[in-house]
Structure formats: structure tokens, C-alpha cells
Amino acid sequence: MDYLQSSGVYVEFILREGNYYTVYQRKYYDILAVLTAAGGIYSSVFLIGFAFTILFSYNLLMASLIR
Image (cartoon, rainbow, N blue to C red; front, side):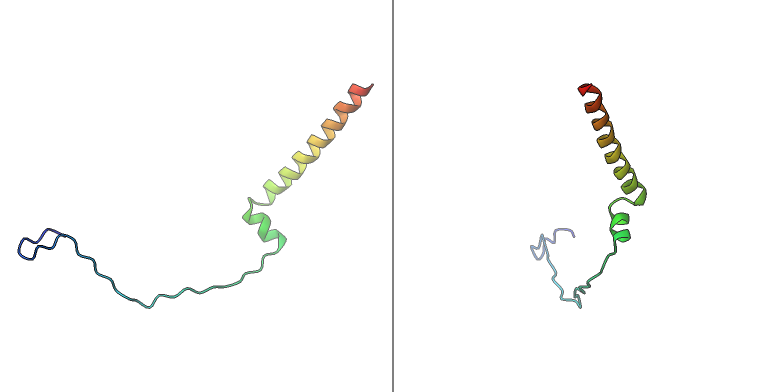
């Protein structure tokens, strides 16, 4: 909007009320939907395998150090 010299208006705000409302819904998730939202089944299986491998290799290391 350009500056109107005749009326002296530089900034004009127009506020309108509309038919706006928010709809709230409750959704129930199962474990598969939670895993999918958190990065997918592949990532979850990879994380479980990684944790198992870390624990197994740590126990193997401690057993070899004790001997």
C-alpha cells in the first residue's frame, strides 16, 4: 500500500472476524504406529541389534581381560 498524501495514511490494518474454529481429536496409537513415527521399524530393529552387539562385545572384552 502506498502512502496517501491526501489522507495522511501510511499504514492501514484491516481486522476481520471469520468462521474459524479448532477441532480437537484424540487418536490412539498402537506400538507399530509409534515405531513408524519414531523412525520406522528398520531403525528400531537396527537399534536393538546395536545395543545387543555392544553388550555382547563388552562382556567378551571383560572375559578376555580377566583371563
